[in-house]
Image (cartoon, helix red, strand yellow):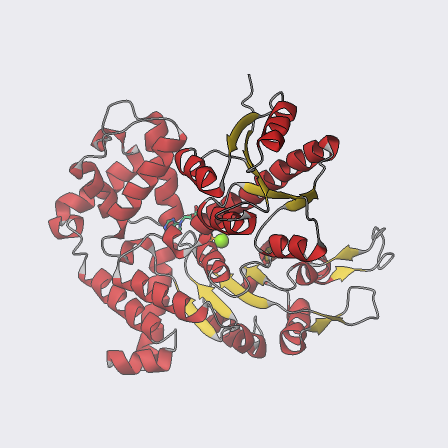
Length: 457
Ligand SMILES: Nc1ncnc2c1ncn2[C@@H]1O[C@H](COP(=O)(O)OP(=O)(O)OP(=O)(O)O)[C@@H](O)[C@H]1O
Ligand SMILES: [Mg+2]
């Protein structure tokens, strides 16, 4: 049995109240009040009133006054006003104060019925949008990025400072470190958050496909182009364009990309008309893009366009203390998702996870916890639930160096952590970072190359 919508009728005239109640009680659960004060009392007690039908002229607080209060205190109740003195001015005023609609007496019951169901539908729709929006905010705001390490705090600072600006952002970091998550957070925290977030994965497409993906094509531009197709630039108008794996863009497309970034206009493939767009670009790469520039694989001018703000995401093993936070977070997420109740994870198991090197970074940790939850049988996750490869890889390490397990890290790790932190603080500017670290730019470059090699291994 479905629950009937609840309607509250407010009128000082008994005949009107009774008449409406009789007409509506078949389809609705009806409440009646003879004054605004009585209506507010009912609304205070019952939170589920869907629609309020209120007379406009009543002694005491009148219909408009009631409307204002209901709108402020019970925003999910839709208000429809009734009056014998229908006039455009009052109607407009009532709508301004938040009334859904307005009916003049004598009331046409068919019309009223239609209005009520339309009002409920539109209210439901509105609530859905609101809840989707808050879900999205949950999903992509900064609260979705877990981390308390120095390195991540610096990343949060940069996100916060950069998000409200229109500056291009280049996010660099090894695979699985959260580059896409950061890009989405910047979008959600920006003035463009109501606009679209459009991602293009540049590595997956050949030069010509990428070109038409980005810029779109006119009908008949090439064989197979049977219809006009809008590109990602057009789709992202008013929002953010996320260019993932930007290092892999073919040089022929790099030139065209540069022009759009400089002039904010472009033409569709096979088209003559210039199209203007308002977009912000965020790019990501797991390569050292400066290296690509030095090797002539990536245009320097394009690099500077993209790299107005530089965010470097450190590999997971360099984020002191974050592993256990992430473990907790993923534990909660996946036990809810799988309907399992876990009484946490043992300290030994966490130590084992902390000692592992996590070449796949946060993504690998997330997948590992999911697997442990799905396969786990006891009430708590223990060392035995840790996948064998991780157990083996990290237990030797753990026995050999207790300090590592406790989060101290080897000397080399400490050095790398320090260097990455200073680099982030200086927004990726290696000259300034080297200065602050007291080493030469060349030494810094050498060290970064060494880390990249270790990362790859
Ligand atoms: N700090 C974090 N807190 C919570 N979840 C995270 C964090 N960083 C990454 N993740 C999760 O890890 C997974 C990988 O993140 P993401 O896709 O953003 O990485 P990426 O750097 O873009 O990787 P790739 O270079 O492989 O594309 C996602 O499921 C993401 O939600
Ligand atoms: Mg990614």
